[in-house]
Length: 540
Image (tube, rainbow, N blue to C red; front, side, top):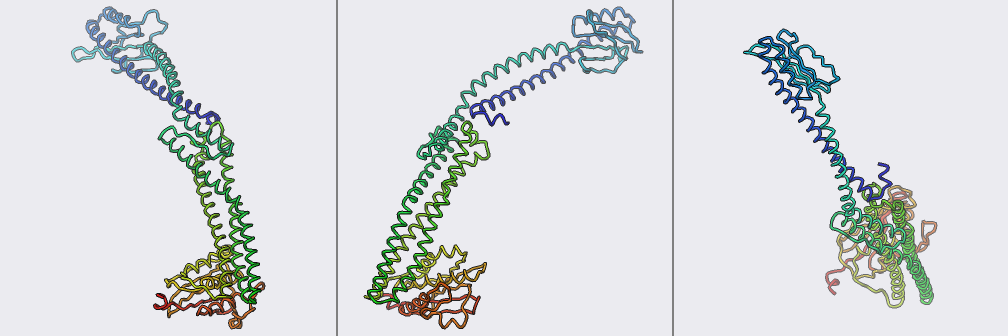
């Protein structure tokens, strides 16, 4: 079997066909030979039995009249059959009566004692023992021996015929297999050539030519489909890699310009509180942007494009028997499935990168909208729009998704149907983003293994309640009354602006922001309550 691994696919197929044909032909010839031997041995037994019956019939009178000479004359007729070695005629009491020895023979014929009626083979001899019966009474016994030269001669002739038939059949099978094996080997070798070309030239635009609608045709279709998917993913990844750095730089410049505009607008309006609030919330969004950018870069770095190179190296290790490697070797049989998985993985990577880039764009737009909203608030007041609060909650979770995942915080959603509300969307979003971010920090600082954040949206008593509940470090009872004060914070790197500005924004929306905590290590629950629109207000 080791030799087969070093042979080309065509030689393997030819060798397999010839071995199979030869073994089948030998088995057939062996079966015919065995049948012929059995048939010939039975024929010999029948012929010897017939001859013995004739001798017994002709020597009955000689035994009855005690005429040995007549019996020997009868036995001498056996010389017409050269296979008969000798014959011996006994009287009923076992005395020798007459005998026959084959003339010109070196074999010494020594008859044994009298046997019962039987015809059997012993080594290279056929032995017959037959009783001579006259009028129902046994008057003697005939013993005869015959050699197997006729059978040996016949077997030698069969061996010659079998050899000639085997040689002719072998040559015919060799000629046919050399031509017919191309039906299988040519498509595989063509596929191997295309795979080798892809591996060497890194050109995924080439395609294998389908030569039939059988399993090999399906393999070619699957291979071409994988090449097409890999080519598309490769192009998409290259495009994403080429434009990623440029787009990040553009977004960074935009953020810097927005930050400058924000500071300048706050300074001109004399609204330091608003500027601080905006900067804090922009920082939250910037954190999401940095996370999205990091995820994109990490995704590109961990791209499994390198796995394709390993598949190519594996294919290059079998340039001469690539077809057999793909069809017989366990590793080669996994190549098509591995390429399909790789193509699917690259598609998922591409979709993830596009999704993160879209998230990056939305976050930048959100920063712009925050600035615009704050500018409008400073001059003309808030801008209201119809908002689905559940979607708004999901946006706040999405903006903190990277940090939540990084610190392994489990998010539990308990959403009920609430009406669409005409409110200042970005004020609510700023509050929710800040609450989710604070809950993440509380879970992180608790060092718990089961960090959990529950977001609950409910409707009752004419108000919509949005609760952000964590099982983090909790809030001491003495701090509950000061938690919303300007500048108060329990974090080392905190500024004390987020919850204060959130409480003010909730009040401006006609609602409230409250907190509950059972104490240190018991977690905390912040609830934003907003008035539900009345039937009259909802219709205008």
